[in-house]
Length: 229
Image (cartoon, rainbow, N blue to C red; front, side):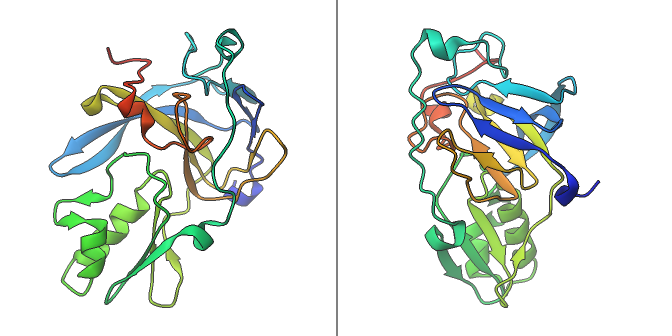
Protein backbone atom coordinates (compact mmCIF):
# COMPACT_ATOMS: atom_id res chain seq x y z
CA UNK A 1 0.00 0.00 0.00
CA UNK A 2 1.43 3.40 -0.94
CA UNK A 3 1.84 6.25 1.51
CA UNK A 4 -1.02 8.13 -0.11
CA UNK A 5 -3.38 5.17 0.43
CA UNK A 6 -2.65 4.80 4.13
CA UNK A 7 -5.00 6.34 6.64
CA UNK A 8 -2.79 7.05 9.62
CA UNK A 9 -3.50 10.18 11.62
CA UNK A 10 -2.35 11.78 14.87
CA UNK A 11 -4.74 13.90 16.92
CA UNK A 12 -3.19 15.88 19.76
CA UNK A 13 -5.52 15.92 22.75
CA UNK A 14 -5.62 19.10 24.83
CA UNK A 15 -3.05 18.77 27.63
CA UNK A 16 -3.08 15.06 26.88
CA UNK A 17 -1.53 12.40 24.65
CA UNK A 18 -1.05 11.92 20.93
CA UNK A 19 -3.98 9.79 19.77
CA UNK A 20 -2.92 7.69 16.79
CA UNK A 21 -5.41 6.02 14.46
CA UNK A 22 -5.13 4.04 11.25
CA UNK A 23 -3.09 1.03 12.38
CA UNK A 24 0.23 2.89 12.13
CA UNK A 25 3.21 0.60 12.76
CA UNK A 26 4.98 1.48 16.02
CA UNK A 27 8.53 0.47 16.90
CA UNK A 28 11.61 1.63 18.77
CA UNK A 29 14.81 2.87 17.17
CA UNK A 30 18.13 3.25 18.96
CA UNK A 31 20.75 5.80 17.94
CA UNK A 32 24.27 4.39 17.81
CA UNK A 33 27.51 6.00 16.67
CA UNK A 34 29.60 4.64 13.84
CA UNK A 35 32.73 6.77 13.62
CA UNK A 36 31.57 10.37 13.40
CA UNK A 37 28.23 9.25 11.99
CA UNK A 38 25.06 8.09 13.71
CA UNK A 39 22.63 5.47 12.57
CA UNK A 40 19.48 3.78 13.82
CA UNK A 41 19.28 0.16 14.86
CA UNK A 42 16.09 -1.71 15.65
CA UNK A 43 14.83 -1.80 19.20
CA UNK A 44 11.59 -3.04 20.66
CA UNK A 45 8.61 -3.89 18.47
CA UNK A 46 5.16 -3.00 19.73
CA UNK A 47 1.91 -4.89 19.04
CA UNK A 48 -0.10 -3.77 16.02
CA UNK A 49 -3.17 -1.76 17.03
CA UNK A 50 -5.74 0.18 15.04
CA UNK A 51 -5.43 3.03 17.56
CA UNK A 52 -3.27 3.92 20.54
CA UNK A 53 -2.34 6.91 22.71
CA UNK A 54 1.28 7.98 23.11
CA UNK A 55 2.45 9.88 26.18
CA UNK A 56 3.50 13.48 25.66
CA UNK A 57 3.82 14.64 29.28
CA UNK A 58 6.88 12.47 29.97
CA UNK A 59 5.51 10.95 33.18
CA UNK A 60 3.83 7.75 32.02
CA UNK A 61 4.88 4.56 33.79
CA UNK A 62 3.85 2.68 30.65
CA UNK A 63 5.97 4.57 28.12
CA UNK A 64 5.65 5.15 25.27
CA UNK A 65 1.91 4.80 25.91
CA UNK A 66 -0.24 7.17 27.91
CA UNK A 67 -1.31 6.01 31.38
CA UNK A 68 -3.24 9.13 32.41
CA UNK A 69 -0.33 10.77 34.23
CA UNK A 70 -0.98 14.05 32.40
CA UNK A 71 -4.12 14.47 34.50
CA UNK A 72 -2.33 13.79 37.78
CA UNK A 73 0.43 16.31 37.09
CA UNK A 74 -1.88 18.91 35.51
CA UNK A 75 0.22 18.85 32.35
CA UNK A 76 0.31 22.02 30.26
CA UNK A 77 0.57 20.86 26.67
CA UNK A 78 0.06 24.27 25.06
CA UNK A 79 1.21 24.12 21.44
CA UNK A 80 3.40 27.09 20.57
CA UNK A 81 5.25 25.95 17.43
CA UNK A 82 5.08 28.15 14.36
CA UNK A 83 2.36 27.02 11.98
CA UNK A 84 3.87 28.51 8.85
CA UNK A 85 5.00 26.20 6.06
CA UNK A 86 8.48 24.72 6.17
CA UNK A 87 9.70 26.51 3.05
CA UNK A 88 8.45 29.86 4.40
CA UNK A 89 10.40 29.61 7.65
CA UNK A 90 13.49 27.74 6.43
CA UNK A 91 16.77 29.44 5.60
CA UNK A 92 18.48 28.54 2.34
CA UNK A 93 22.16 27.70 1.95
CA UNK A 94 23.41 27.74 -1.63
CA UNK A 95 26.20 25.37 -2.60
CA UNK A 96 27.86 24.86 -5.98
CA UNK A 97 26.07 21.57 -6.76
CA UNK A 98 23.45 21.40 -4.03
CA UNK A 99 21.27 23.68 -1.92
CA UNK A 100 20.08 23.13 1.63
CA UNK A 101 16.97 24.27 3.50
CA UNK A 102 17.20 24.55 7.30
CA UNK A 103 14.36 25.58 9.63
CA UNK A 104 16.43 25.08 12.83
CA UNK A 105 13.86 22.69 14.35
CA UNK A 106 16.42 20.34 15.89
CA UNK A 107 15.88 17.11 17.84
CA UNK A 108 19.66 16.67 18.31
CA UNK A 109 19.77 13.23 16.74
CA UNK A 110 23.10 14.24 15.15
CA UNK A 111 22.60 12.55 11.79
CA UNK A 112 23.76 15.79 10.15
CA UNK A 113 27.34 14.90 11.08
CA UNK A 114 29.21 12.80 8.53
CA UNK A 115 32.79 11.53 8.53
CA UNK A 116 33.77 14.20 5.98
CA UNK A 117 32.08 17.05 7.86
CA UNK A 118 28.63 18.33 8.73
CA UNK A 119 25.85 18.82 6.19
CA UNK A 120 26.36 22.59 5.98
CA UNK A 121 30.07 22.22 5.22
CA UNK A 122 29.42 19.45 2.73
CA UNK A 123 26.81 21.57 0.94
CA UNK A 124 29.18 24.53 0.70
CA UNK A 125 31.75 22.22 -0.93
CA UNK A 126 29.31 20.05 -2.88
CA UNK A 127 31.46 20.28 -6.00
CA UNK A 128 34.10 18.18 -4.24
CA UNK A 129 34.02 14.46 -5.01
CA UNK A 130 31.56 12.60 -2.81
CA UNK A 131 30.52 15.61 -0.76
CA UNK A 132 27.19 16.17 -2.51
CA UNK A 133 26.12 12.58 -1.85
CA UNK A 134 27.19 12.77 1.78
CA UNK A 135 25.30 16.04 2.28
CA UNK A 136 22.16 14.44 0.86
CA UNK A 137 22.51 11.45 3.19
CA UNK A 138 23.00 13.65 6.24
CA UNK A 139 20.07 15.90 5.40
CA UNK A 140 17.73 13.05 4.49
CA UNK A 141 18.57 11.09 7.65
CA UNK A 142 17.65 14.04 9.90
CA UNK A 143 14.51 12.71 11.65
CA UNK A 144 13.15 16.12 12.63
CA UNK A 145 12.94 17.21 9.00
CA UNK A 146 15.03 20.26 9.88
CA UNK A 147 17.24 19.76 6.83
CA UNK A 148 16.12 19.18 3.27
CA UNK A 149 18.63 18.84 0.41
CA UNK A 150 17.50 20.56 -2.79
CA UNK A 151 18.84 20.07 -6.28
CA UNK A 152 19.70 23.17 -8.33
CA UNK A 153 16.23 23.17 -9.91
CA UNK A 154 14.63 23.54 -6.47
CA UNK A 155 13.44 19.95 -6.17
CA UNK A 156 13.80 18.27 -2.75
CA UNK A 157 15.94 15.14 -2.57
CA UNK A 158 14.83 12.66 0.08
CA UNK A 159 13.58 9.13 0.55
CA UNK A 160 9.80 8.87 0.71
CA UNK A 161 8.98 6.92 3.85
CA UNK A 162 6.06 4.60 4.42
CA UNK A 163 3.83 5.67 7.29
CA UNK A 164 5.25 4.58 10.63
CA UNK A 165 6.08 5.92 14.08
CA UNK A 166 9.36 5.25 15.86
CA UNK A 167 10.20 5.85 19.51
CA UNK A 168 13.77 7.15 19.70
CA UNK A 169 16.27 6.04 22.32
CA UNK A 170 19.68 7.73 22.64
CA UNK A 171 21.94 5.68 24.94
CA UNK A 172 25.02 7.76 24.12
CA UNK A 173 23.29 10.72 25.80
CA UNK A 174 21.59 8.47 28.38
CA UNK A 175 18.29 9.91 27.20
CA UNK A 176 15.05 8.87 25.59
CA UNK A 177 14.36 10.92 22.49
CA UNK A 178 11.20 12.06 20.79
CA UNK A 179 8.65 10.41 18.53
CA UNK A 180 9.80 10.07 14.91
CA UNK A 181 6.75 10.41 12.67
CA UNK A 182 7.41 9.20 9.14
CA UNK A 183 5.61 9.13 5.83
CA UNK A 184 3.36 12.19 5.70
CA UNK A 185 1.08 11.28 8.60
CA UNK A 186 -1.40 14.14 9.21
CA UNK A 187 -1.09 15.76 12.64
CA UNK A 188 -4.06 17.68 14.03
CA UNK A 189 -3.54 20.13 16.88
CA UNK A 190 -5.70 20.21 19.97
CA UNK A 191 -7.57 23.22 18.55
CA UNK A 192 -8.28 21.54 15.21
CA UNK A 193 -5.46 23.08 13.15
CA UNK A 194 -3.83 20.71 10.67
CA UNK A 195 -0.07 21.04 10.75
CA UNK A 196 1.75 20.96 7.42
CA UNK A 197 2.03 17.33 6.32
CA UNK A 198 5.68 16.33 6.10
CA UNK A 199 7.73 13.24 5.38
CA UNK A 200 9.72 13.58 8.62
CA UNK A 201 8.99 15.22 11.98
CA UNK A 202 9.86 14.50 15.61
CA UNK A 203 7.26 15.14 18.30
CA UNK A 204 8.16 15.89 21.92
CA UNK A 205 7.47 13.19 24.50
CA UNK A 206 9.42 14.51 27.49
CA UNK A 207 6.84 17.26 28.03
CA UNK A 208 9.47 19.99 28.26
CA UNK A 209 9.89 21.26 24.70
CA UNK A 210 9.63 25.00 24.15
CA UNK A 211 8.39 24.25 20.63
CA UNK A 212 5.47 21.94 21.41
CA UNK A 213 4.29 19.71 19.88
CA UNK A 214 7.68 19.33 18.18
CA UNK A 215 10.90 18.17 19.82
CA UNK A 216 13.55 20.80 20.55
CA UNK A 217 16.08 18.38 22.13
CA UNK A 218 15.08 19.40 25.66
CA UNK A 219 14.97 15.68 26.55
CA UNK A 220 18.76 15.72 26.71
CA UNK A 221 18.95 18.83 28.88
CA UNK A 222 16.38 17.52 31.38
CA UNK A 223 17.80 13.97 31.20
CA UNK A 224 14.44 12.50 30.26
CA UNK A 225 14.57 8.73 30.17
CA UNK A 226 12.09 5.89 30.17
CA UNK A 227 14.92 3.39 29.86
CA UNK A 228 18.38 4.74 30.73
CA UNK A 229 19.21 5.55 34.34
